[in-house]
Each structure stands twice: as structure tokens, then as C-alpha cells.
Amino acid sequence: MMRIWAISDLHTDFEENLQWVRGLSLQDYLSDTLIVAGDISDDMAVLEKTLLLLKQRFAHVFFVPGNHDLWIRRDPVRHSVEKFYKVLNLCAACGVLYRPRRIGGLFILPLFSWYVRPEEGEESLYMEKPGEDSTMKVWMDDYHITWPVFEEKATASEFFLAMNMEHDPRFVREPVLSFSHFLPRRDLILSLKRPVDKEGRPYKDPHPRFNFSRFAGNSHLDLQLRAMGSRFHIYGHQHRNRFRIIDGVTYLSHNLGYRRERAFAGIDDKLYFPKLVWTEDDGFSTYPEN
Ligand SMILES: [Fe+2]
Image (cartoon, rainbow, N blue to C red; front, side, top):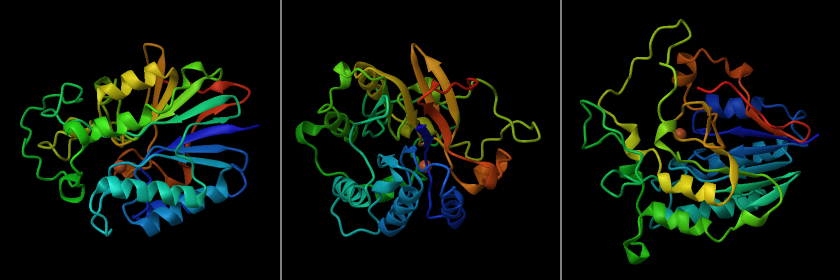
């Protein structure tokens, strides 16, 4: 029986995260598909090593680049679009999928994306945060991401959404499962419950002046995935696990993230696995909304 699993933000530059990937069973998933919703590493050697480890474990691996994957601090490239194609070429060489494909009874639709800042357009997912530092000097993309001048003054987000338009799964018979790195909706940023740690203490914002929503995603991505008939959308980027059903579409985020985030949530790496999304017998998985 074929199953589909999801994970994001593997960040295997960190040895403990690479160890987590190595710790995934070499037997349990051999008929299965893994969707990786971006952010493995900006280091091409680490990215290659990680993709090959995953390919040893799963029949099919899907991936779309996240922001970290497009950093150019280590690469002799002019800009992050060049890096994007380098990453896709590496995926192809490793047998990792980034184009739509029917798997079992599903149509899997990878969607490329980028975030929209509040000053770039109203499709930004920006929400005001009292006391925020609007200069956002701590946002590392501003040091490691460079874009070319896009045609017709398009933004990076418009560039990637336009690439997705070459797919038209509206007439496919199978249910469509899409995935992206960035968030498609503002209402996914906040948890339904106040987050608490493993002892039940309320989450204390470690970066009170940092406003993530400036870089979270864009709402045109949601219009696109709905226009393409997606019923289930997987995403990453925020390092917050979510399961939410909104207007007929299910959204799931399940990240590995950083060690300190797992420690806060009381997660034992050995007992943490990709999230089951779909099985041939039971269809899409369902979980409590959060
Ligand atoms: Fe990440």
C-alpha cells in the first residue's frame, strides 16, 4: 500500500538534523512518497547528501526550494534565480521530483513561490505587530538573496507564480495535492490556541521586534492552488506545525525546524517522523485543527 508523507524545513546544515534524516527507516517507506516543502540547505553538497539519503528511503521524493535553498553566499552565481535552476538541476540528477506527477490515485502539484512584503503589494500576508522593528535588519534573506531585474518589473513572487501557470490540473480526474514552501494565507500564521511549552507555560516570543508576517508568503498562492483544484495543501517556512481546513481546502505544515524549537515543544528526535498525509485505502489524513 502506497502512502504519502510530508515534512519541511529539514535544515540539514545542522548535524543533528542530518542525523534525524539518517535515522529514518531504510525499510518502512520503500513504497511511499515524501513531500519536502522547502528549506534543506543553501550548501549544494549538503542538499545533495540530504536528497540522496531521502531517495534511499522513499520510492518518490518531491521538493520545491525554500528561501534558505536560494541563498547565494557560497555559490558562483549572479542571483537567486540562477541558484533556483541549479537546485532544480541537482534535484533532477538525484531523481527528486519538482514537476506535477500522478502518484497512485493522486495528482501531486509542486508550486514555486516567494513572499510578498507589505510594501510590495496587498497580497502580502503582513499583520501589524506592536513594537516591531520595521527595518528588519535581522532578516538574513536580505543579505543572501539577490534577484535579477524581472521583466515588466515583476516581483519574485510574480515570477514564481507565473512559472506554475504552465500546469493546468483542472481537468485531471484524481484529487489534487499541492505544496509550496511559503504560506498561502494570513490566517495560517497564528495558532488557534495560545502556544504553550511542554510544561504548559505560555510561549514567550524570543524575537519581540521581529515580524515574521512581512516575509510569510502571499495570498495569490492560495488563489492559484484553489484555481488549480487543490484539495490539500502542504507548506513550510514558519516552523509551526498546523492542520487547518478552510473553505474546503486542508492545509498542513509539519516541520523539522531547529533543535531549540523541538526542545521547546518537547519533541524527541527519535520519536518524530514525517506526517502521514494520504493512504491508498483511507485517502487524506485528518488531524485536530490547531
Ligand atoms: Fe526554514
